[in-house]
Image (cartoon, rainbow, N blue to C red; front, side, top):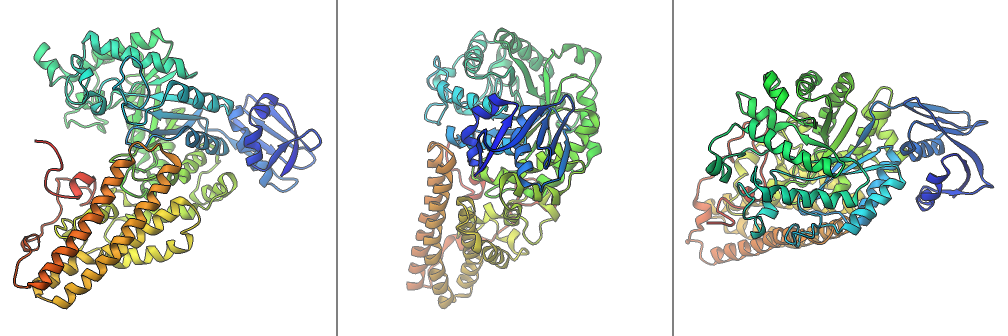
Length: 620
């Protein structure tokens, strides 16, 4: 523990004494004199030696500066220019994984270490709204007290905590309850123009105003593809999406003004409604003067984590500037690819995107960390991605190697442990950096042992060898952290499971009873390995998330284990009567094809419901 006499920013030091102790520092007037100074320059200057001083343009950089100062040798000086006004993550709380208050505080401390100064909480229905008790019901929603506690903690670190909600689409979860009758357009869209809709939105925004200091509020409004096609069309006839969007936006902005918020929305619907191809990423879209005049003054967030060409981002940013002079950018740390993060695509696309943002003068940057399809990938896997965004904010010439070095300085962790996780989906046959976002690890984990819809696709990938090699690389790291324990066990499971389905099918058609007996033995090894995987995931989940939502993962793992036991029974019965048929194995297998044609990417967008069975999981 190093004793330091801090001079300057005394309020910050006093508010964060406990955090400083975690960093190995005790604030003590008898310690080494270290001056904390303010500058109007956009920089962080760290000097160690005869003059010990950290000079910052914002208090949010103090912790980063302190860790840099601790790492320097006497006589060394480091100057970092700050590229952007605001950089931080957008954390998805809405895909079943609602972080505990303690976990959010730990995340905020990691952001402070890196010098990131904002954090957006994406909450579709996971915050309490007293007038609507079914909103977020049994979903782990935050109480008003919890929101205030997190906001207070962030403020002490000079990190802006920003609420991000939905006020148009992406509301299938709350709208399934009866309270939404009268202001629901489709299964997931609010009914534009309904008085009940704006009474509901007023209640949402009123709650947030009570909890958050920030004047920023993200209103969502993205991916409302069926806008105006449900009850709205029955009541009003056909109207263009652009017209409905602007109508709705004007009404919602009246509410944000009432509560003194400075709102922003995702920008995709404006592009979608004007594109001849019906897509977001169309820089050839033409906005007329009438279009520009009809869009109210609101911040537009351009979200894009799909392109590796800086010129593409620049063209899209220029097109955004035609609609608003208040533009922010949201890139991505690919935590939603499947069961493991896609660092290849994160690194490549972030480099291109943030270079374009700097060139175009965009100053507000977010790193989305979505949790699609059940939040299977832990938020802990994103730490190096956060360091990558910090690298692009502070480093004079950002490089991957320098980001790795700084990861050790600021988070005291090994970047290679995180980058190794991209190997789960960078299997043989997948292009460099997995720019098509293939997710073979998830497909293999969940695919049925007898139906085996992915085996035709897997045939050229040599997955058994790939996952055996990965398991051997992860084995020494198994007990290093809860995250690595889970991934070491996942590699073991995939290495065990990869050869079983093809071997069962081949042995069955050859009438090879001995080989079927061998696969029964393999399944009996797989079953306890799956149980261990579930337990490792359970520990990792409960370290960061509330228990709500885990029941979905419990069901998924339980299904895998139950199905493996069933297959053991089916094969054992066949061994007793080899002349009988196993109907599932009589069906000829076809390539898995759901209509996507991404490069090197036959398995992209394969989610649990489409992997586990071709039959319906629920519904009529």
